[in-house]
Image (cartoon, rainbow, N blue to C red):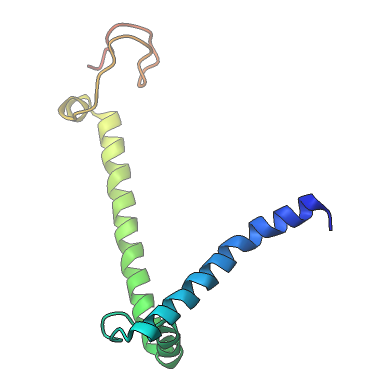
Length: 119
């Protein structure tokens, strides 16, 4: 194995090794200090609960995903409608707190002037 390949392999494996080390450290500290499972459950207990209750967790995860996607969709639609309204109507544009450029090209009409004719 070439040194470059070894370095690339180490670089790719490092996140997995670090995650495993942190989980083992968490488990060991939890068992040695007898921290209550209510306060901080060990990773082994979390994993066993995930396996045992996977159907309930999947149902709630699906509900959460659907709710999030509905909210995201409503946000996108609302943002696009507001953007179109702002771009089409000078009255709505003037009511927004968008900064007006002093010189440069107008982002709306493309004219190079000190003031956009729509302002």
